[in-house]
Image 1: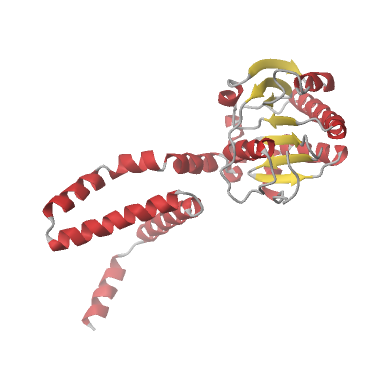
Image 2: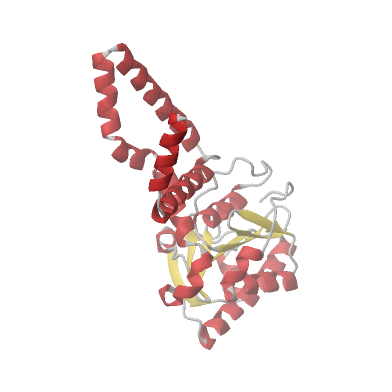
Length: 285
């Protein structure tokens, strides 16, 4: 009864703001676990927990030197966590920044204006990319086109050659001709223009990607995981036309279906939350 009375007295002191505070912390912890549960950070977190357990036991047993050493380690834990979990922290912040739930209320933060001229240029680049993809699919010519959206890819563009020209089938054909110096890299399309070519993309860290998918598809998935870009891939081996977005690979497009999907992603950026795809276990780049 005494324990129950103590608990009841504690509950009486809880206010609405305390409940909100507890729920907020719980949601943050849940979000962190959700982010790191399928990454290498899980193993690192287990190591930290083991060290904490060793510190607790050493303190109980009076192991002064060991407990002092571990205490020093935990005092610097904030800096160490920021260094060790840097990729996961960066990915989490990117996901917060890419959250479309609130983005529509802050359109003035967008880098892209939605004028008629901008839409016309983007539509032209979509049609040019689709026409080029069909030609490349028939001739088994590999291609990698990155359509930039809200997240700027200037750091990726700096790894290639800046072109900043209007798109055309002829221009894409020259870029991805198998003896051209820029054909191996990716081309970035910004605001309906071919901004850069011959760019190097990061490869995906997803271990569940089909082993038959080659470097071109892995690079497309990698940049789609790290940004909100829409990536168009034409397989050099099979000629299959694919799109990568948010770490998901959509495949087997025709010209019309490709134009429709690109317009959905690029001209109405809030619809991508409702699109679904899957990692197809076929094909190679």
